[in-house]
Amino acid sequence: MVNIKIFQFLGNFSADELKSLKKFIKSGLYTGNRNYEEIINLYINQKEKLQRKTGTETIDYLSIKLKIKKSSLHNRLSELYKICETYLTLSQMNMNGFERGLILLDRFHKDQSYKLFDNLAAQLENTLQKGLYTHETFKQLFDLYTRITWRYFAANDYENYLDYFKIKNDYLIIYLLSETFKNYIEVHQQKGFKVYRGGLFEYIYDNMDYETIIKEFKNTDGKSYNVIMIFYLLYKSFKNPADKESFMKSLELHRIHIGNISKELNEYIYLVCNTFCINQTNSGRTEFYRILFDLINDKIRTGFINELKIDNIPINNFRDYIQIAIWLGEIEWVKKFVEDYWQILPERYREDERYIAYGLICLEEKKYEEAVKYFNNVKKTNYLHYIDSGTNKTRAYYRMEMHDEALDEIKKIRNYFSYRKDIPDIYIKNYNAHLKDIEHLIAYEFRKKDKQELEMYFRKRKQGIPKRWIREELKKIGIEAK
Image 1 (tube, rainbow, N blue to C red):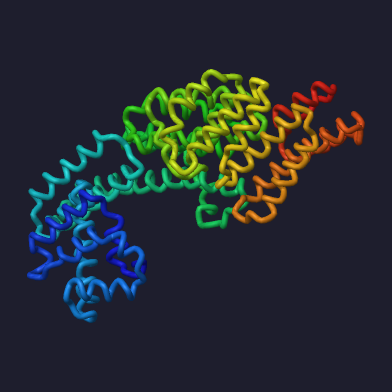
Image 2 (image 1 turned 30 degrees about the horizontal axis):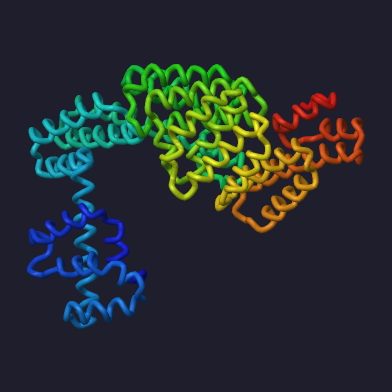
């Protein structure tokens, strides 16, 4: 069945959408006198059976069941696919009143029905200006004012044309700036992972007077100005991570204007802020642990936790929240957070996240044997979970003075690195450095290295800063790790 395009398409429809599609087909507006409902019913009733068939077998089966020649069947399936496309397009348009409005404005403009045009344009403008800001708002305002500009030009009303021409261009620039700021943040992350492939954005990042442009825009739209300022301040923060003031201003501005911003855009802003804080903690700026922890609690309090449902670990920060809270010693918070939210995590790895969280709690509570049991329960289908469970199990073994077991675990992790080609190089470098730290500690325990040699190793170490528990062990020995 994988080769039957229409069935792949129908497989994306919910049960309610399939019912609605059948009603759409029955209307006859787009289907003429042909009966396509029989094909859909056959798909619904025989779905599991069809999934076991090849493309050729499926066509043979349908031809017999529907009593249609194969040549005619191919045409019928192709027609049904186009009908489904039309249905889906109209359904999406029905849900998106703005896009529907633009299509009507284009028609009113073509017909020179200016009274209808003006009335609808005013409604759309009012909706956008008074509504919540989304990722699309600046572009939508640009699209709307572009059409209003056309309307006045066609009507030879040059005063209004010139006014709206300016407004249209202002929103074009603000839309481009908002996308530039958001893209810069993504570029910064890609560069950090050494996967960035370049692009035209490079030519404008350092060559525009953003502050003057944004300040000028304040006269056009004060409400939009606050939103673009949040993006600008975040852009400045990523561009110069030492600029803590810009980041703190972005947080303050976001808190003030959070009620003017859509849920999706708020989620995005929180995600960017989280990412910035995590970058800073990874760079050794420990004051950002508390800033991030407060930010996490803000997210929970305001209900912006949809990211925890997303099956994409770089976006889903559940594990990072656990590690941040543990670093701060907020163990009771971690226990409550895990119990409250682990069940909304994506099904394929929610158990692994829970086991790792409980294992980390046990490490903090010095219940090392129990921690190992939790880490052994992790399925390790995701490389981050494998690394998390393996490295933390090594920590537990070290603390229990089971040094041979710790070294065996290190060998397993390094072997895993050797054949998993999907792990970013930055992760491998960082974790290999961590594993090397543990090996040096164990060598010291086995009297294969003395204190001076151990201290020299950590003084020359270049790959970030050692993990907190490594620094704690060094402190016991009398070595200050930097």
